[in-house]
Image (cartoon, rainbow, N blue to C red):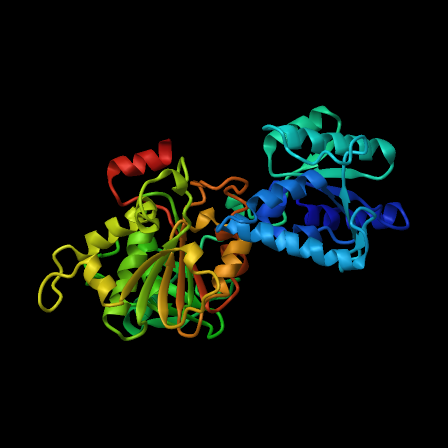
Length: 458
């Protein structure tokens, strides 16, 4: 199964030899595709894009929501309304990509656009797809949906159905952020003494981390960061004394703290399963730099408000009280870092930091539309974001702000994205060549032996 964009690229070269011009295709889009990525309307090159009228009805139900789905729904409505200036949507209008967009409906009953029960819209989409295919069987029709059950139904009806995967980054192909380099014993000793070494030949990424290994003694090792632009291997920031009472327990945690504490690295992505310490390390590094007032004025912490179960509307209380269950993991880590630590006239607490303006914990919905300068910004659980949402967050970052994304692609709570199509993977893949960014994959669980077994076995 291919992404729509890659589907075209893969077949373009073959088609060039088989026929004078590539055959145009028709892509029929489901609601979940547009809510996942509103720009999907223009993602199919010069092919035809078909939008069932029932999809527009479903999108209308989301427009008033103060969520990212609501924002996406409003964007789609504005985009389609703007296309009306080019002609009637029922006849089809030209897109800037060279393709055409057309709103389609049930030819037997064009007035029936109200979803009546669960599954009704899916069945109507299938009916439309079957009718369009039968009317022009020589022109390929592809139903694009992120609903696996709808793809199964379509296949059973003899229709071609694909997932929307233009933003897919498979986990087994994802950049890990670190490598191994074999050196002579003398070179490693020189590196320890001087703190840098000429970079050996090879293909490396900016700010990639390396385990330097003695060719003759595998136990003789050192940790380094790669600087391809300067052609050097450089020593890590010394964190032997710990950061806010937290000491690294493995080489990947050393790598992570180096990236988190270096102000020249303004985008850090840390990936790891539950218990590897990604959130705790990021919070410790953020507190260290905010409390010292050397680099950042505030520590801003946020996470998507996607629960494992019922959503926020089921919870009692004010907005702040509703958000507490989602933010509790952050508060737990902060309490661990601040427990018993002195603060001039007493012990430091989370409430103390909030009242002083040094710390803010907010849902992502409060960040949209803002410009965020001179802050250490942590977005936890970033695997629950779509590529478009991550792009929105990155464009909020102002001068002298460091953005840290932590995520576990094995734990996705959001419908219609998975371990390969989430925004976190998207950032890791696209920013690996950028000198301002660094990525670290944490592999060893340090929470407890039981947590490590659970993460690996269950």
